Length: 417
Length: 155
Image 1 (tube, rainbow over the protein chains, first blue to last red):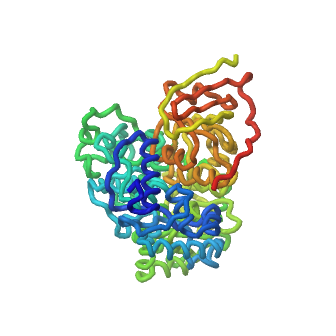
Image 2: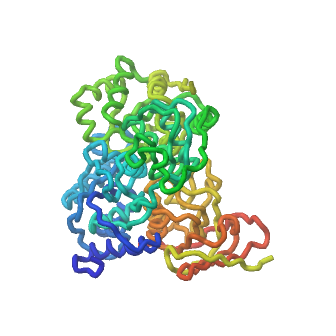
Image 3: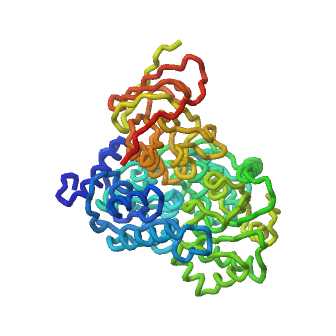
């Protein structure tokens, strides 16, 4: 492939993988047949490249780190587009430019023809892309990477735009880090001493774990309830935000750690780090440290993209109520699940209350919020962390019910119970 | 006073670069942590909040956060706001790929902690192909951030 026998794009992809492998001090590539990357997300830099040389140019520079004018062939292995910008249904509904919607629409046509499935979500595992245990994959999106590694037992590093692009044309990725047995053992033991059994608590525990371990691999034991997909989605996203967690183990729950001993094998378990009431309060205070004004302009739900059950819960909380005239509520969902929500009537209930159900993107990806937003509230630790930086707004973090209350009253009245 | 300090590490991206250091003791987020249009750190609680890394040698412990890390640093190259070199202690896919697509000399795994040895404003020369970092301490520490150097815009 490197020599050009399979065309210049594949050669450029392999060249990038070799440079990347050298940067990692890794000598071997492994075969992958499942790539989740980003090609269609609009940006000013991409728009310029498209003007200069079309989508092939944009793919070469951004997805292959190659300056040559090359044709882009079909994807060699199954490849999907993660979350990106907003789609056509957002036009006029939110302050997002029609030029970006058009640019993304053009991109979808270009890449779709080459075999990129436009899943348009940060949670491909919610819409049918569910790698199996032990499968080597090449995924981007830190919250999806940590879910695939930890909950599904698949093997992926946190890839980037260019490495995922190169993997899509070669079916190869450096065999490093999480791809190796030696890169998957736990490094830190976290002993949970307060009950963790709902969405808010799992998110706070994740934010704590990431802060403690950084890029390493926490093992969670103690007073935890049986988590579901939604809680682990929040936990992993939070741990990948405050730190760079790509893999964790919960003995008895996640597949590679039947016991605490197995989670650290072949090493012995280290001394435990306690997550107790003091630590929990500190995490809550940290996540709410960027909120001062109690007037809430904007409520954001669905990060990572909501499950059908989360959409249903939001609809139930909003049923028969109406948003404050000064507040907007957006719920971010995978487009495929929006179809389910529409058919189930959930979308209608949320819209009757004045809320918006939006696919494809989120305020952080698209750098957009309702006009004039100064203060927002969310049930997502990840958004509470990032949006103040990305949009320069204040943040409140709490439960779904507190967020809906803020949307209805226009006031933040949340607090740790 | 101005005696040079030499650190030895491993090549991430080969090449030679020379310029003033911008040192972070905290890990850096790419997506949601920097503004590629201005080449600045935008994470409000970060020690380098508001500081510009354009034309500087960025010295940091490692990358954190989103998988958009490399893409955001690649965008700094495309927009002409990139750092001219990277020195980091902990290798990760984010930092490795980020350095590759930013196309700047980079070294890692140094024999001393670069974030402790190097200070913002020190003059640093990276000979990344040989894993060498040469630090000329600024006469008076700390010095204010310098004016960003002019830089040719990438393709």
